Image (cartoon, rainbow over all chains, first blue to last red; front, side, top):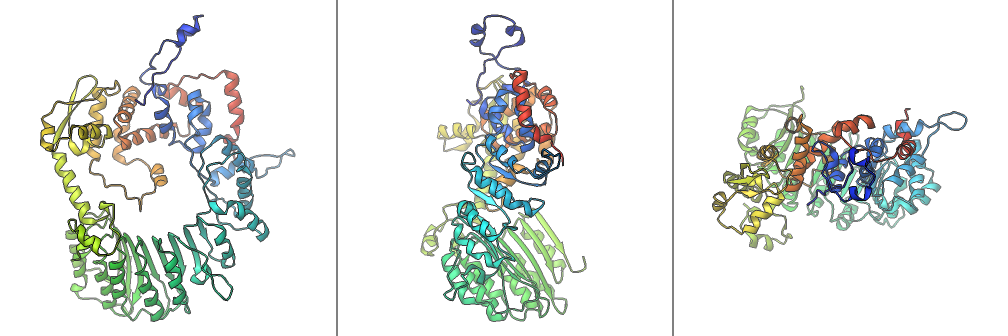
Length: 398
Length: 213
C-alpha cells in the first residue's frame, strides 16, 4: 500500500514531556491535510510543480524538502530563468549574468537528465551556460544525458574543447547556416536528430566524401538544383533507422524531374519511416510530371508511415489527383497535411476526389489546402473518416 | 488488398519479408477490432464496493482502467466475461475509497474509458506532463471539500488509475502556482516541522527565485 501511516505529534501532545511515548503512537493526519499522503504519492503530486514553485515550496515541510527536487528530470533555460540570472548584482551594484545559478539548481536536483538551452533570450549567453554545465558535471548533474543547444556564438577553439566533453550528450543538431561545422557530427555519437542545409553537408569536405552521420532517426535537408542523388544511396544505407524525414525544395531552386524522382525512389528503402514531409516551394515552374507512382511505392514499402505532408504546385489537376490516389496506399496514416495547387488555376471535375473514399480510415488529423474544394470532397470525408479529431480546410482565397 | 494489413494473416506477414510488428495496435484493422472488443466489454457491468460498503456499477472496460481491479479480474481466470457481472462486488479495502470517492471515480472512468490510446509517435511524455487539463476534467476535479478531493486522489492511487491521479496532481499544482509559502501551507494544511532557523536558512538559499529582472 502506497500510503503510509505517519507518526506525528499534535500540538497538545507536544506540550507533554514524554516524547518517547508520543513517537510510538501512529496517527493519521486530518483528511484535508496534504500531509496524509505517503512519500510515493506526495512525490508524484509534486512532480507536476514548475521549477519556480519547487524552489519556493521547499520550506513547506521536511517531507516536501525531501521530495520536491527528486523528480526534476528536465530543465529549460528560458527567459524566466535567465531573468533571474540577470537580476544579480555584483559588488559594485551592477547587474551581471550569473551563470552559477545553473550549478545551484543542479546541486538541488540530483536527477536532471536533459537541459534545453535553445530558448536563451540572447544566444551570446549560450557558451557560458554550456561551460557551466560542463564544469558542474564533476560533482552534480550525474544523470545528465541530453543537451539541446543552438551552438552559436562559439569560437571554434572553445567549441572543440567543449564538444569533447559534452558531445556524447548532444542528441539534436541544427547546422543550418553553419555547414562548415559538420566536423562536429562525429563528436556526437548519440545524435539522432539532424538538420542541415544540403545533403552534401553530412559528408566530409575531402575528396573521398565520407559519410558523417549514421543511424539517425530524424533528418531534414534541402534539395539543390545540382543535388547528387547518388550520395543519398550511401546515406540511406547507413541510416536505415530513419523514422522521420523532411525534404525541402526551396523557392529559388528548380530541381529536375530526375533529381526529385531519384530522391523519392530511394525513400522506399527506409522501412521504418513514420513521418515524411515533402515541400516543393519553388517560385517558378509548376511540377509537370507525376510523382503519384513514386508516392504509391513509398506507401507500400514504408508500412509504418503515420504522418505525411506534401506541398506542391502542379501544372495540371491530374498530377494532384495522382497524389490523392497514392494516399489510399498509406494504410496506417494518422496525420495528413496536403497543400496542392494548380498553376494555371482550373476547376476539376467532381470525380477528382473519389479516391478519398479509400483513404486510410485511421486518420485523426487532416489539413487540406487544395486547388478546388468540391462538395463531393466534404461528403467523402464525412462518410469515410470517422476517427477525425482535427480537420483544417482552407483554399487560396482564405 | 495486401494480406499484410489484415488481422488474421500472420502467415502473410512472415512471408512478406517485413519484420512482423510485435505491436499489434500498429495495424489499423487490429486497432479497430480491439476497439470493438473494448466497446462490447464495457456493456458488461461489474460492481465495485467501497470501504464504507456502498456498491457502484461500472462498465468492465472502464473498471479496468484501474490496474488493481484489472489484476483482480485477471486472477479470477474467468473466460466467460458475462459471468463476472453476476459475481459479488469487488471490495476496495482502503479507507480512502469512501462512497463519495468511489462514486466520483466511477464517473471519471465512465467518461474516459474510450479515450484514444497514447501514440508514442506523437505524444511526448514531457509534453503530456505540461498539457493543461481538459475542460471536463477541470470541472470534475474542482471539488470544494478538500478532504473529499484528497480521498479521491488517494483512492485513485490505491486503485492504480494513473490518469486520474495525474488529474488530481495537476489540479493541486495549479492551485499552488504563484502562491506564497504561507498561503500554500494554510491551503493544504501542511504542518511545518522546521525550526524557524531551518526555515530561514532554506529561504536564504532560495532567495534568488524572487529576483526580478
